[in-house]
Amino acid sequence: MPFSEVIGQDRAIAVLRRSISVDRVAHAYLFSGIEGCGKRKTALAFIQAVFCGKEEACGVCPSCRK
Image (cartoon, rainbow, N blue to C red; front, side):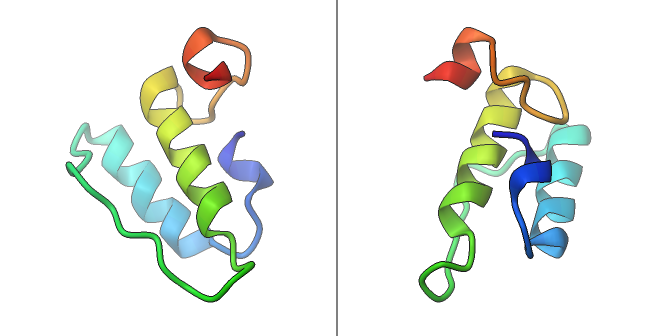
């Protein structure tokens, strides 16, 4: 799932993208908020982007498909 599919989390996505681009991904992140705010989608997009190696997860490589 690419970051572009996540709605309403622009600030969080900017921080996560920056951590990937400068190769400073922390060992843990806490995604919190009310139910339905996009925590799970944001977390999935982030982890796919980390393991895919692209800014936006491609969705087709083995890392994205897991």
